[in-house]
Length: 307
Ligand code: PMP
Image (cartoon, rainbow, N blue to C red):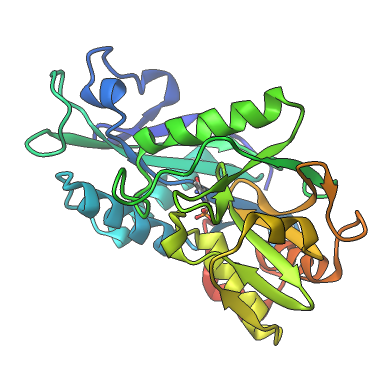
């Protein structure tokens, strides 16, 4: 089918032209970072002429959990959120890779930072998106001078917009110093994650990643990588990782909805491995890129077709 795109968003209970999805400057969430949000990808496969949304219910479960952690007034279920999203994508007509940004924000035109006793709204917009960071070239990284906030500061398992001040500081520091991405240490000084992606190391054929005790967001892509690695027979270890382990890793890669699976060639000017994409990263990345467009029957249950 030829593609004919309508730019639509979900806003204040209905699907509307994107140009009409605007909020008042007095909106509570805009002042206090009290929005919880998600980021979901849809992958277009030309051979089956379909758009596949990746792990939509898992993303929406995390979003609903974010509202629960933050005590936001919100009653929609992950299944209802899925149905709204599929309707939005169908009506929009995309036949290309997209990124969905659903969010629930405190919508009152009121002062006072709080989560209780404030009305909320759900909104969803759609962007066309291929790579967010280059997945073929190795990424250069630095350990950030900013520590990742911990769960006693802002709940780390909630994807709350206020927490992204931390990510923005680290990302800008890294890019302004000539690097592609930042790596956070947690409050204790152990490796946590990137500014918007989880991190994995390979040492002696074993895959190592920090556990959720290292203040990270529990990524849906992280969960997928762990499953793929397990299914491929790799040993996986979730544990604390020290900074110096980064320097001597054989391979390092990031996972995330935006970044997908991207390899790291350098940390703090130390070349990782032999400076090329390592075999385990390569295998996981190619499996991932095949499965998101429906080319691997074993993981078709992670995909929801739009058409
Ligand atoms: N950590 C942070 C801080 C993020 O913003 C993201 C992106 N949502 C991730 C990790 C990766 O999570 P996911 O795989 O669910 O996109």
